[in-house]
Amino acid sequence: MARSRAACEYTEAEDKSMRLGFLLIAAGLLSLLGLGCCWLRPALQERGGGGSANCTVLAVRQLPGERFACTFSCGAACRGTARYPCLQVLVRTSFSSAPALLHEDERQLRTNPKCSYIPPCARDDQENSENVTYKQKYWKEKVGSQPFTCYFNQHLR
Image 1 (cartoon, rainbow, N blue to C red):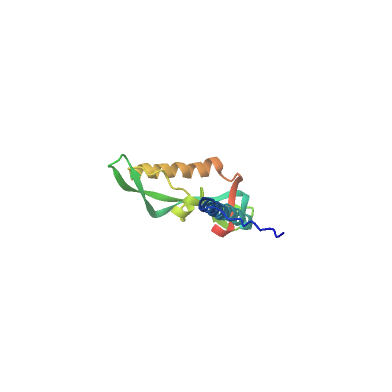
Image 2: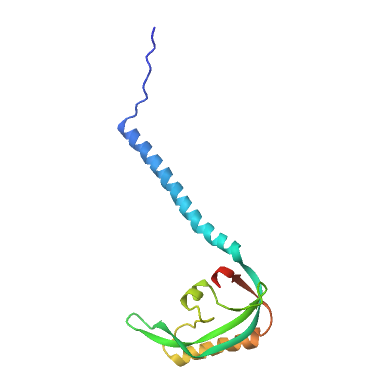
């Protein structure tokens, strides 16, 4: 007696469902790979030359004659451009004895790499200047030569 072998055939609906399942698994793995790269890259960059350091203020100065443009908004139909002076805060880090320019964060560094502080843009240039002068006094008088924690990344230097 010969046994007949049963063939595993799927219906068209089952076949489509299996293909869809495999496609969803592949899409999930690709998404996980993409997100992993987005999360790992900054962490690896930080390991390479960044981390917390002790900083000491060396000099606080406004660059004479240097004024940068900023855009202000005072409503839906009200926009304009104003100017602010460039404030530089030079620090010495525990990583290096060479002076480094202090920045609030990476976004500020990309926006204006020459200045340490970008004030909230006001319509009046004088108000922007007063805001920068206030920060200058803060760094000179309040912080002075006291060491403080800063974050240093040699790759962005």
